[in-house]
Amino acid sequence: MALRQDIGRFGLWSAELRSDDPALGGEIGEAAAELEELGYGALWVGGSSSVEHAARLVRATSRITVANGILSIWQHDAPTVARQFAELDQERPGRFVLGLGASHAKLAEAYHRPYSAMRDYLDALDAAPTPVPAERRVLAALGPRMLALSGERAAGAHPYLVTAEYTAQARQELGPEPLLAPDLKVVLESDRDRALGIARGFLARYLALPNYTANLERLGFTEDDFRDGGSDRLVDAVFAWGDADAIRRRVDEFHAAGADHVALQVVDGGGHTALPRAGWRRLAEILDLASA
Image 1 (tube, rainbow, N blue to C red):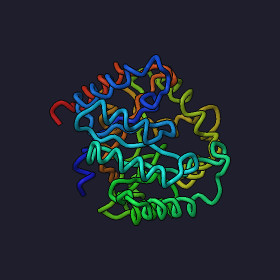
Image 2 (tube, rainbow, N blue to C red):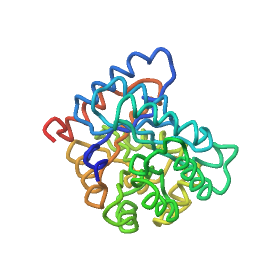
Image 3 (cartoon, rainbow, N blue to C red):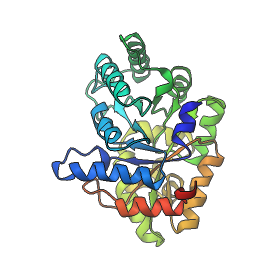
Image 4 (cartoon, helix red, strand yellow):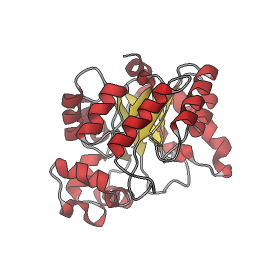
């Protein structure tokens, strides 16, 4: 698959790169160019990003793939998205991948029958005057039906807040051909108490969203694991933390489980108000991206 080759084994996932804060405008472009030079294969623009958010990173770089991680189907109508995709692809061919997700009932007022809504959205993208090619879109799949849809109607899946065990199950369900590009959060901290504190402060918001907890329950986690920002067992399963060797081992676990590409998100406890550029550089060193 061309997309698998284009994005390589390691990507960088960031909600900070989506920021509309004017104070970060210039730095976002500079950071994107640096991330390209550091050796990341893709930039995943988090925080319910739009085509416009991805486009500015495409224009600030020369070769790296930029993807939404993800664009909410409730916030952007399909004909407009298809037109924006076509315009960006004409301007910078092959540089953009459309990541789509059905979001969450607590975040989207129109949320209803997400699987059917996603299927209809893909139909609309296919029916546009310039369709969005299936091989240039991925779905934020978690449950079995959406995961199957990602293999049938898209290049593959970009699941968020998952474990290596989930990755192995997803690979088995998808088969060998579709792209599997899970997210993995990284805390660059070796002290266990500090690492778990940073992770829990970040994780708590996601444990209030039933789509995530339902998927984790399918993996054997329980209500006890969702309290107070997450149990030790849960944090250890969905985060990489520790020294360089520990972080490399966790990333390797995801690849060994069947991930083609791991979208790495540096979590430093600072929220989304500043770009964690020192952490991005350190992670590139840990993964030895310069020689990858």
